[in-house]
Image (cartoon, rainbow, N blue to C red):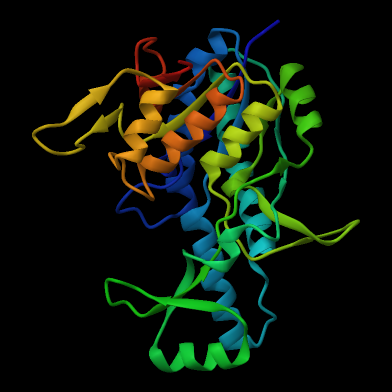
Length: 314
């Protein structure tokens, strides 16, 4: 049986620092990342791809806000904006990966799935929303919004104003996971859990609906990898290795660590929240739940069998 790998694209696979976010920029970035996945294809892996959507969904929310202010258009909720972003980002990845495969003599179907991810309405994260999304607001604007909505806002620490904050609950179940596995094991490349998936919940038994929240895309990709029985889980980021004392004279690159070692490093706060810490947690979650190993590295290191940081069982 061919091996199955889940690959979580990091933010720089789509958009890089200093770029405006044009489609041509994103297409070029994705094309380069897909070229770096060729070693996995050549080594017989079936692939499932997850990806982030932070800057893209942020831009969608800005357009949302502008359309409401200028033209009175109804504002779309966050779950719908997430679905929108999954579709257009998936289209870019699908198109560019098809170009890369064709140029290198491979023929595979590539499918983008708009993916719902179940969360628990009683998750403690809903009592303490911390994930900023969308545009900045002035003091006057935020007071008006508070009186008109039930939204929660937090002041930007850099002094840019106020932003809406939403919960980041844990993913419980990936929608259509059985079909995702069947499609991937049949040799198709599947793009799914974009942006961590569209958060949905059951307000009452038998009735599913979306909810304002943002799921961590690495945690969602890790859960997917577990639920489809993937052999390996790759988290692509903008550094070649996980490091201790990152970006200091005492920096130490980690090549291979056990789950226990990773947990201790997390406990001792060696990794930054909002950056490497969630990736290490996602890696630990995958390996603890039966995965063989998780590799955290840059996309351009995938041709090197010794590349990256490998998190393995104790």
